[in-house]
Length: 276
Ligand code: C2E
Ligand code: MG
Ligand code: MG
Ligand code: MG
Image 1 (cartoon, rainbow, N blue to C red):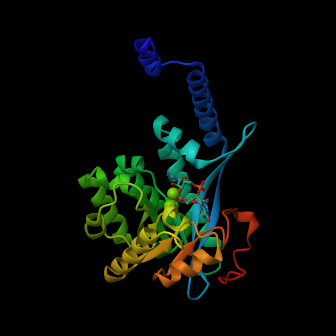
Image 2 (spheres, rainbow, N blue to C red):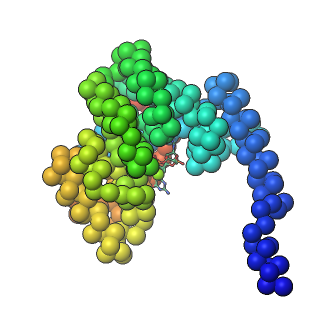
Image 3 (tube, helix red, strand yellow):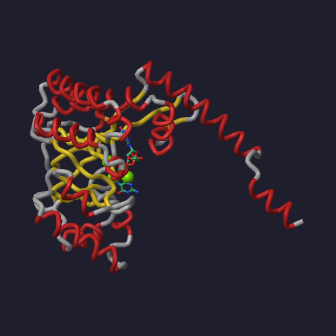
């Protein structure tokens, strides 16, 4: 009996899994179509300076409005895009579109684009895409930030550093996203020339009650200052959290309190940089 139970727990195939696999396959087919049809969209969420209350950057966040399933979150479709190889085309489209959009903003607000580690597997392609996007849009290269996660850095690939260096030489900036969630190593901060570190929202959620979260945010802010990097604290939803992270030394923040991700059509880009 125990053996049967044991075997049960190892059962590879069950109806729920079959359904999920079918789902994934269907989503992949639909995603391929969405790419071809131009059915993907970039939403933008402001990153603000806590002192001046000005928007410094807008992060581009990809959205897919599925014809029958409705809005599918990037947490679902990005992994599928990565597994199916679609991510390169999607990611490169995002770079071009974000540069084009930001160039229309009649001010110095920057734009930040998430980059999948898989895009670095084709070093020439990503470098050329960024160059072309900057030229075609006339966006100043200093206004473009590329957000990467620690998962890119654990591979410790020489070509990764070469790509980062080549793009930095153009004036493009790099941000380390979701800091504190993965295999966070302080060594990354000294090895790779990041302009910005984004502290993951998991530390923000309980910042006013959890001493460890406080200590980590404060320490990262101090370290970043010493290394001349900016810090963005992600996921600020309440006034209480805003006050807490500002006291801990954060200069920049992002979160629903300041603005949700919105389609380009929803904000008037020239209305200025001040948030409400
Ligand atoms: P991320 O880069 O860390 O983006 C921040 C995520 O936090 C976004 O989720 C944003 O909507 C959400 N967020 C912002 N403020 C708040 C807040 O106050 N509270 C809460 N609960 N959430 C907040 P989203 O748009 O669902 O994106 C999820 C992830 O998908 C992103 O995390 C990023 O890793 C990935 N992603 C999105 N767009 C792209 C893309 O174009 N390319 C790639 N490779 N990945 C992308
Ligand atoms: Mg990001
Ligand atoms: Mg993040
Ligand atoms: Mg995240």
